[in-house]
Length: 435
Ligand SMILES: [Zn+2]
Image (cartoon, rainbow, N blue to C red; front, side, top):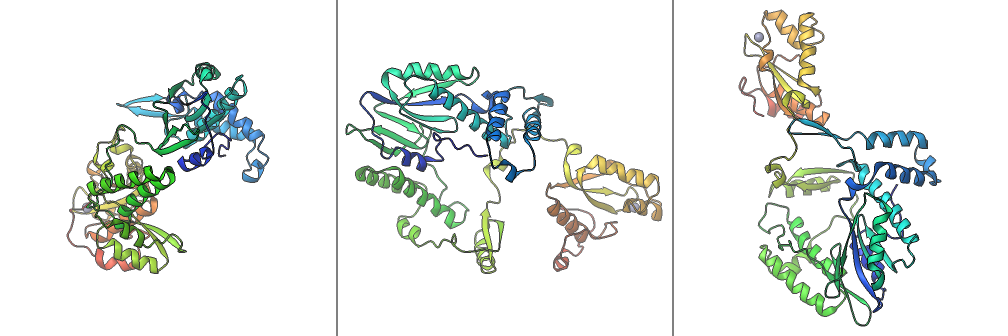
């Protein structure tokens, strides 16, 4: 259910299209109203009633789902009232606003904004002549004398949703990445808006990234200059500026030639898709081979800055981690058992312990070893070797371990591993599992 208001813009290109033929009167001014922390300010009961009302008038709803309105209402209520998170070991419940981090929040917030803007515009005596919105940010053209009255009116629509106001400075205002300036003629001219925090730092040309990704940086900057700037002299000036910025980011001078000659594979038809970690010199060749076999390839960096920085969330204690590959050593010999579970390690260990206690060899290979050799398991030294939520990857990792170490007491060699890999996974040395 995508919001489809006449007032919303999809992106800056859509916005530029909307204002391309708009003339501003001398009695009018450009204003921007912005909602203060939108997601956490939207009352859930309002969001719910707005959404249900929209669904009630949706004539194609039954084509898309077998659920009726009451089912959807219950499901939404659960989603809206079940946001809990831990911080410093304490569990908190979110008691106001749409759930932080939930995919439904953006949709509900957008629908609520749509409702608020309709109400605000319909109930004001002299509404703005132009009102365009992107999520919680607006671009408005309104009579100069009405600006403050309209701002006050906006803030009366919902008690929790507060709008801040920004007026044009030196005839210019910013919306998304566009700077809009009023001309005396009385058209609006546009150029690129950069935030005061902008440092003109982009992906450096010497970075360990595929070449096409680096060239995309340059292409995007030049494309944006073309879409955002109509004035030839301003455009020329911006292109000179881009060339300087790119040189500062290590890009070579003959860039125009390079960007024109890059081959795009966008129009090709592929049978499947894969994402490979990028290793310079290797990934390019693999990509060519896979492309020839009809596989579309995307590259991702091996390590990102985000992975290197500390995580803002509390770490889950190992016993609570779910989807893990683990090992349980034997107390009396060098053998280890390798296993995987989608639940947490403690739950799985309990099952092993019960099987050993009941001498149920069918349920656990650990039990078989205990009975055959009269050994005991070292439950205390059981450890997680890897956490992997994807079951298929978890099975492969488990199989690789079982096949690559000699002292495993598993009965089978795991699953999901093609025999072609077995030769490179032959047992090498006992113990010392590398993970
Ligand atoms: Zn043993």
